Length: 590
Image (cartoon, rainbow, N blue to C red; front, top):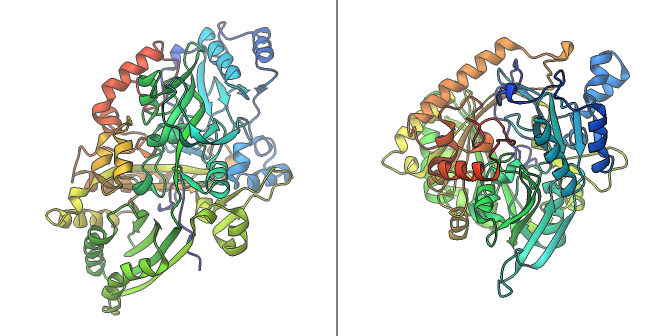
């Protein structure tokens, strides 16, 4: 059974396949930075001096698409266009990003110089160099940032890809805490570590769980976790930010600090949801681990309604079903609604047997079965031992259709990504709308308004309700950890995050033979905006998740961080008074 084809994505591809046109990054005021054609730009000698300080790890950039730029008909170009379908290949290219741009927002741009850092001290040298010469500084681990914050033209790029050391500790005590501080099981990962490596060490090898992302190629210590870090099982374990125990950070003056509950507590709090690329560069992070449940599993399905009224009735019933049976710590991931009157189920669960899951869903199946003239459906569940969930040997043998294997030669260990992730690789985004849905909207008094809005929005475009990206109904432990983060507090009241996403795969605005279709891009973006307006009208102040927000979001400070913004801004000014770390819709980027 192909149950995981649509699951465990960086984001799930529920969009209309369209395309787009991009402009150069508008992240900040370029006039404040030194440019290569100006006298302030470092001389070749100064670049060489930096190279010596960082042990020869300075790279002069070459566009990863150069074979296609130079000769679109060459075998080199053909090979490149195959390689860019592999997210792990893209991570090995310092000039590549996982998304190739965003319609009328940003293009993937290239830094002329790249620091391929291997230590915190090398990062510190890069920071000092950029500050001294007033050069735009950007940071990239895996390059998944949808808002284009891991690339910029005329910049110095700190690339953490090679920093991959990972260590599990049974009794971790934060640095600087008293001797009687109780140690807990934790994992420490360097900045270039990906979740595939973290899950392998923590879950497969140690039999525990660490709250991370669903996408195996996303980095552990970067913008994902610093921006919040939802995962498939966040209703049980909370956000990634809530699990941060300690971080090693290089701040704007080049100092290397330790931030935890016992020292630099303000910086520690800011890093737990205040956004990546803002307060410093995290070179190492330590995360809490948890007892592993007996099982993880997936429930997938497709329900097609015959008429629009049937589809509206289906939405009505699902909201009731969610409220009564799924609004708890066991369930996560998403439900997708589309203009074709189809509801797709792409859900996960933890700690339940197949018998329990099938029994729980029986009323839903019965409701559908009693109306064969109105609905056609398939619903299936799959359960596996939790320790095998990211086990390459187990998955490749028992569930080979659910993973894509990295078949490049000379990789140190097997790498894979979920089949559903393939649709995300080298995507050019046309739109990415999102917003929290407070649980009050699912309650009987307001559920009809929610159902109406979801139905009307689904007439315009596909949309997805991510039930793991809201902590209403979460475990008490997850809620307690979340209250200690700097994310928008409204996440605690949210049952789900709604997303409306669009893009086109394998298009590159700067490759003449692979340019996007601008007319389709413009139309799809317009439809998405209309759809999101219908949803936002239900609760205009509910906010959204910063890692998955609209590039053109209005009142972004309030929407992304709510009442926490002013405190975050004060911390930003304290640790980065000259605004060296500046990125689009990041704290202090006004």
